[in-house]
Image 1: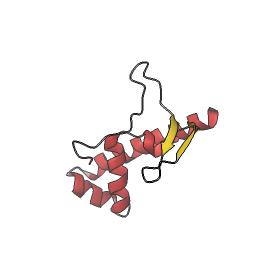
Image 2 (image 1 turned 60 degrees about the vertical axis):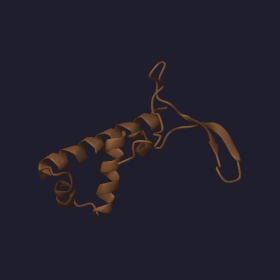
Image 3 (image 1 turned 180 degrees about the vertical axis):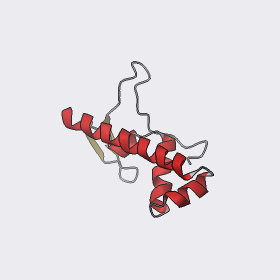
Length: 99
């Protein structure tokens, strides 16, 4: 999980709540800038809790049993959580294809 001081990439506009896109990337080492209008990758569109789950799931070798133990939850609860993330990612991919 991110630390208290870690900045998180905002996903939605604080003014109108529309989905944000990336406009500019900057290299912290040489100050090179890349500008354009880029969609966020689907995984970046997940909230912090969902991103953490995906990272831990991958690190556990895709084991729901290990995830249930790690999270202190039942296997069916973790399976439902994974299904919700899969559904969300599928929806995001469909929206990206339509746009």
